[in-house]
View: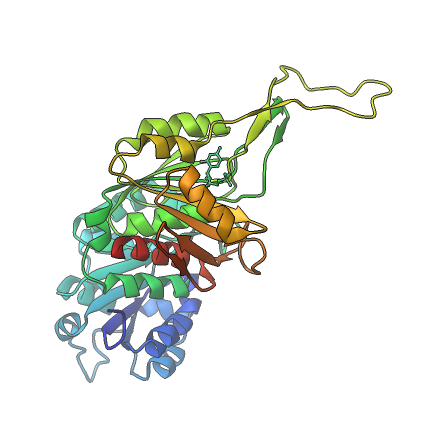
Length: 398
Ligand code: C5P
């Protein structure tokens, strides 16, 4: 099942992210959905009703009445298979939490008998405000689902949390939403995910690190949390910020810290997904003061010692958990990934190759294959969010 033949109300509220809604409507219509657009009166400052009416091929309602005609909000709320409020501004969120009813979006929301999904969009500070957090918790307690915002550049110029989820990812969320209900939550109540690089200190100001951003692991955390799984995300040093409802972030720096944290959380997990780019070695000694070069030094030798292998250790301790490792290979990809599967006693290895364009460190997209003892499943190039969705869907189908 997916959005094909589904009746979707898209309610647009007044956020700059409203400029993305014609694209969202186009994606939904292309995927076979019937879309009725509603807007709050202020949303028309950000996107024109004419654009949305054109792409949805339906009149857009921005008021409960147009003086000559009453728009039946009760009928609309019963007609739809889902009410999607995107973008959901801080103001609309607050009204939803408090049952206010001063525009057509609120009237349809309050009378809707269908499931309600919201894709919040607001500035970083607004997203982190305790009032917003409380409002989110309230609307979730009412049974509404939140499509978590993403991290990135915001209208204010600030880089932070609060960008509305990308339309492609909203479509992917909806497609999964129409799959048999709660499949993910039934399989995986709790997940342990590692993400990002590790930094291995040389002295107080230097470290050995790598280019991993943690985006792939964060996408897994987002997908699982959105489906009701409680997520422990053990996150190495990264500029990515994570404020996703249902995801507890455990910041760590070194491989040893990541190892210790994972071991303390592993017992509770039903699934562990190791996406982190963990340093294989760390300096034998960590200088207490900044290492100085001496007169005449042309070379410097660093002595390194092996770090513990987190994935292999979890593999050796495995009970009921599903254990998923990642492999970034540059040559003999499949053969090496299969060896890794055995050596680390993992159930699956997700292989990404640096040879594929659009895949790997820092990219928004990824192209992977899922390798198990019996089968190799190749996935197309997709956004990291879609990759995470496809992998989870595949694991559940096994
Ligand atoms: O052996 P290799 O580093 O290529 O294996 C990659 C997989 O193992 C990834 O899932 C990575 O997160 C995990 N790993 C780990 N601990 C290490 C090294 C890698 O968990 N010390």
